[in-house]
Amino acid sequence: MSRRDIVPTGYYGIGIIHYKNAVNVGTLLRSCYAFGASFAFTIGRRYCRQSSDTVNAWLYMPIYNYPTCEDFVRYIPFQCQVIGVEMGAATDLGEFVHPNRAIYILGSEDNGLPNGISYADVVSIRSRVCLNVATAGSIIMYDRAVKARLGVKHVQGKQTG
Image (cartoon, rainbow, N blue to C red; front, side, top):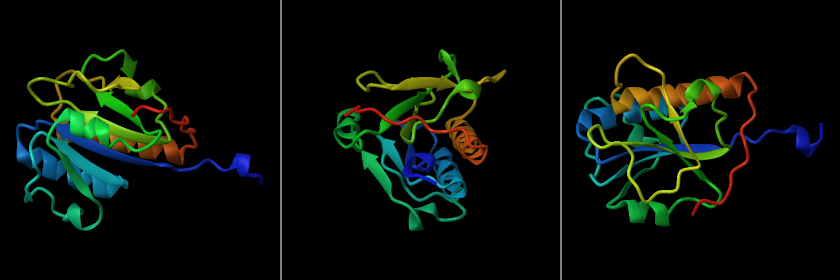
């Protein structure tokens, strides 16, 4: 087996901007732990410990807080793609190939994704109704995990920051 045959697993993080309900952040963190996220984050509102994070995910991975979108953009890891998650986006999650190094950002319940962030892609989860952010984030992480187990190769990242 050559080095070219080895597909790196990469890493990913996921977060929410200006979340409305703190319980959703705790639920998202529990899913981050379950699906092996490398880190989680909030933009705009600082995370406070939630009873919905029943596994205490903060013990196992870093949780970052960025006061503004500008702060978030300043600290995007090298060659890590930012993937937006939004209802009605052109790219359906079922067809999406996850980047090797990714940061998934979930828009706020009221305002969606912010401007001022360069997204490598914006994906959508087909659903009859709007999903809350914790559910949407859990589906994104599950999709990434399943596609990795099935051998769907990640795409190599490009410089975004």
